[in-house]
Length: 365
Image (spheres, helix red, strand yellow):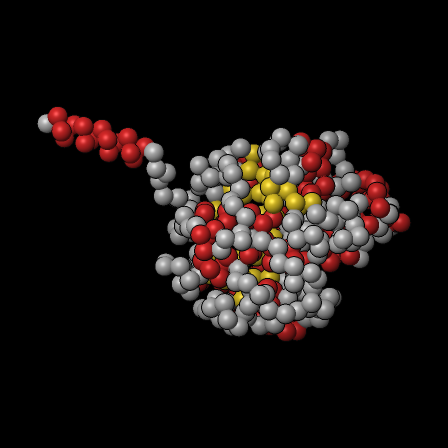
């Protein structure tokens, strides 16, 4: 009996030293192209609501729509789901005003390098601009899609034709929708067919870039019908309107994206596969300039525009402690997202890809 008791105590002690399996069974990575940390944490900025800076023809009306007395009020007005749901139940990094920074490491500050760093876990010097060529390295989503239990359970939805190259559409082994043509893989519903028809019948404003609604309104019913476990979303209108220096439409696009994320999360919480078992990560691919380098530098990004290296990152899920807005914490990097995504599913990406940065500390129990 004494031996049994000692064995029981030893087993109990040993069990207490090992973490339990994650509750997360599904993960969604949502990227909002070029959405600045300044608007995320401070809300709309009155200084950009002029004709010279933001092409604003009716500044008083725009101020009435977005400007509130405090940064907390402004950011909740702009991104209500992020600040009312995601942050209180999860974590967010990147507010320089509170001693928190999130940065890229690729040094280029443009989209393809940013997506590749996020999805592969390290910067690739050969990816220095947005020229279309297949990603030299598999993404973490491709890696997860080949792990036991995840075969044929991954998908990527994006609003930019370059995603076909970023994800290596022809060889990655899972469906990739770049938003610029019909999407015909998997189980298709009447709603999906209707969106495909809209895509075919409607002119695109930007070459190679779809409106975010073309992507979201196809992706949501596809997810409901096909039940993927690893999902990428890439929305792009925030970047496109910023490149036109149109601050009003940039804000509108950010607000719509927040609503799209809310629709996604709400759908997941009403589905038995996803409810209580899904982690979601939100981030941009790069930052942007600001008024310190010119009246319209905010619309641009890259090496010439200081601030392009600054991003933000939010995470919510059943294994993430609800620490809210992080302050006075070490810098987190874009390159840490890949390992963090894999770890949410209990997978060790760093063992398979030594070049990838380690996961973000403190985001999982």
